[in-house]
Length: 387
Length: 232
Image 1 (cartoon, chains in turn green, blue):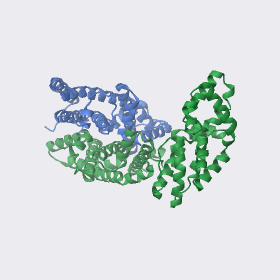
Image 2 (cartoon, rainbow over the protein chains, first blue to last red; image 1 turned 30 degrees about the horizontal axis):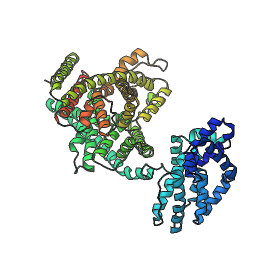
Image 3 (cartoon, each protein chain N blue to C red; image 1 turned 135 degrees about the horizontal axis):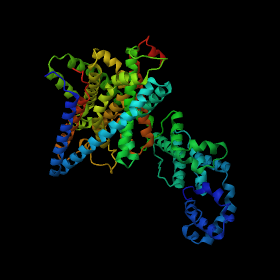
Image 4 (cartoon, one colour; image 1 turned 90 degrees about the vertical axis):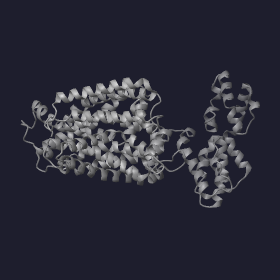
């Protein structure tokens, strides 16, 4: 009730008379913190139930007319134009009922006069919501913009709690007002929401994309041919001991978790090059083991086998290689999408996690479909033509 | 020297090797807490690896066969399922599985099902590839392959990639476990495993080295065990 504040009063106060005396007193006492925040009474004045009921009954008789959207919007626009203490008080008197009008009045921030406007409105918003969001008079335009963005994010997240939903809006709210619905709305509006630290999630993706793409494409692009060359060497070798040694080394390299190598190579000097080498070697070992099996019982070259196994490998390997990339980015402190996704998952930052995982999923799907394109197709095969 | 070992001998060697590993671990366990974690991790790796392989085969064999040779809707559904579960790094999927279930058995079964989907796709691709390469090798009456012929010839020939994948089950599980631990996404209630030794800093390097060596050894043994008898 206290959180809903003035926005709930037009629904609660008219219904007060319909309650039995005991319930009425309990509700009136529960509204005391709102009266204190609205600066219309002190806590000690409303400590008694009967007094509280009398206060709120009189309050609604006197002030019901103030709780109208048009008058509150007018007050907010006047405060945005000029700083007058009385207007500020009038807005504080309607409490959270004025939130939407105040958020709308924030407007664009381009000049120092806009900064002053944001400062005035932000002070009232901070008082009503009890959230600390200072915008001092000497704040820069960028700082004021950040404050405005934060208030708008607050409204996007919590606005529905202070608005009455009726008709089709109530029906749409069953989807739109869920966390997923809000995230999807942000995506459709051309962004991916804002992270807990106030950054645009799309900026986070843009920052991490280069590192992760580099690791992914260089690691896979180098690892796949290396795996093919490895299998070719293993098969062409005439010495039994070389073949067995190569097979054991390949299996061991593919088997020992990437985390072990990552920890072994983790040092302040370890960087992108070490990360690329790790991803490349892991890929090469993995590919060589699959190719060794694919070419073992058939008389086909590893290169032909590489093309034929590209579809199944392309389908199963990307999630695994992306896990390796998450690890190297985390341990080597590389600013990539994997690190962003892991840290945001651990911190519960939904927008950052959704943005990073959406980008990783796109990369994974891209790889899978690219690998499928490499697969040779038998043009005249009845099986292929059926599919 | 170049004669390949028979399947029975390879199975015997793998079983005796695993027994030696378990015996060695139980002897080492009382020496330090790290070695105790190694011994408990070995039990977890072997049991969970077996469970994952079993669940994966149960999922992969019918799904892969149906997607390759059954109605087209199975192919579409398998592709969609693989795209869905494969769209995120496996480490995150495993972390979500682990966080959403309190039971280790359910976690292992969920990983087995995930692995099964991957293997079903491998099987489907291999069957389609074999059919495309040699469409006449199996008699096709009224456009349908007889089930016995399909199982004897197509299925047995297409199991190679599945066996490769199965031989990496323990390694796959340990790699995931280590990655989840290293990313800080491991639930506090999770049992001590090799992933914990390999993914988080330890007081001494011996348990981690033993765990890494054991994973490699088990994988090489499983890889050799699943080697077809006609391989050179």
